[in-house]
Image (spheres, rainbow, N blue to C red):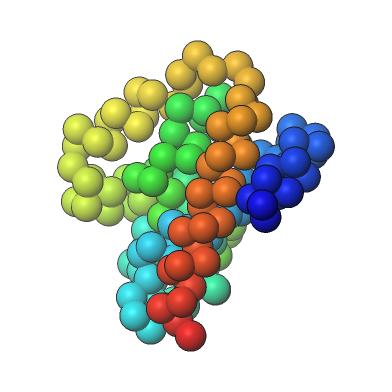
Length: 147
């Protein structure tokens, strides 16, 4: 019942608002997934450790990249990132790539790089709504670890 009300509300949103809202939930999910039992996460670029609430959900293939539909909501593309690396160093991409190579391997990093511009021209509203609802559920469960 509640999920259906949320779905109806999301259907009425403008597309760009829905994308932003889904991005926010997805990025929170990734920060929560990577946090330890004390809520501490490691920056995907520099390795500094902060509480997940003090970090951003940084994208290796930036959300502002042309296209980026192929990997925007792909878990391995989004990691906790300190505000210094994400904002002041514009993603600190070279360091981010090096750490991802160690963590994920060359094949995965190159797959993301080659699939960033998949030929998706528009977001499918239903997929965005499903993604938002799923991330919201996961976040609710993950946040229980920190209470």
